[in-house]
Length: 508
Image (tube, rainbow, N blue to C red; front, side):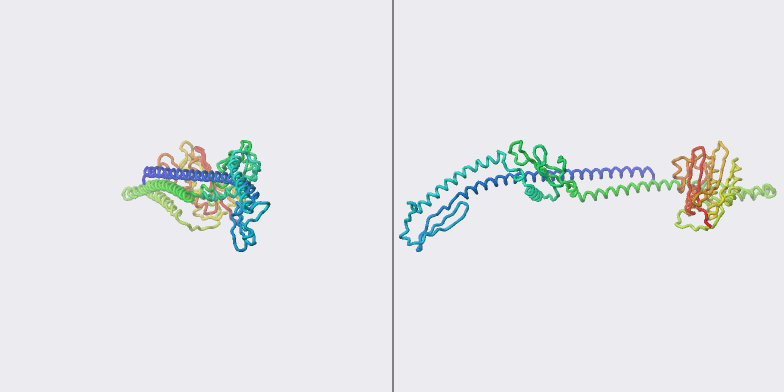
């Protein structure tokens, strides 16, 4: 897949996800705003109903008190008596519904007209009934005036009696239930100066207004100086509002997860594209590296077929040495390609043994000096480690040192003779420090973190100006880690590069 196509797909996916997230966020904001408005309206209706019920309780209190005074001052009002064989029976009742019977037992013919204080009993009861009827009618006419006084004048009753905290709490709980709200709340009753008359334990001390606090004036027709306000705070309002969005949040979370997976997929695609490009470079380099020695060997073989060459010992030795050298070079390149298989294996068979690092490095230096001398450089060694016995695989350890020296030759400076230095030192905690330092072209800071990656090669302008497959340092890093050591690199552009290897010493 072309990189341009990946970028196009990335842009399209980004637009789609941004649009999807925008719509979800907009929908969530709309739902939150709607739920918040519903809660606010329900809370206001609740306070309105509570205030109305308190006013009704106030009116009921005074009406019942007045009527009770009227009823307690009443006497029995008899109804018309009925005659029977045993006497005359009267049925009486009060305005409150209390009933009683009065029976006069005697000969009905003799007590037909009984006198009490010079009046007939029936006439006396009728007169009393009329008097109390007139009295009740008078008091009833005062009810309108009583109601008017309640609605327009401040009462002398304490506000704590008129709006008892327990009653107010019960009213609020009932009205909230009627509005479908079941959430904790705190109340406070304050005067016109915001001084609390009483408040619940959980109410805020500052009594400040916020989005979770609602306020309603009680008994609004009273004088301004005697105004009181009921405040209700809902500490869990936000939780109540967001609770209704239980389905939206998982959908939003899934979208975010899908976005993260998509981003990761795109990153992997670019990384795989980069790896593919490096593999293509590797194949091109490998073809170039193999083509040169094969061509040289082929040319030398053709020379051997020439009779004039076989008759000349000098020419014969030259052709033979060319074939031998190029065969070694080709074999070395094949071995480096085979190193790539090590990275695809979970386990690599190592032949671990006690090795004198000073001895191995000294042999490598003596062998490698010829190659350095060919380019007019110098290779010095300072093997000062007194204890240099390490447990390593001799072959892989040799390849590690050789790879680092070979890189120093490849990335030398053309304007200055190559100077290579190899040293060993004993350091604390029974460890051996191996340093390989050169004065080459150096490595850029941005490349230092990648030089140990497989197939990665530091760009030097021309793809083939520096021979290699990008496997050497990756192989070095893997081998050092498997041998229980660490490797670190320091480099300065146009100054040189230093590789530092730390290996544990063998404990006798």
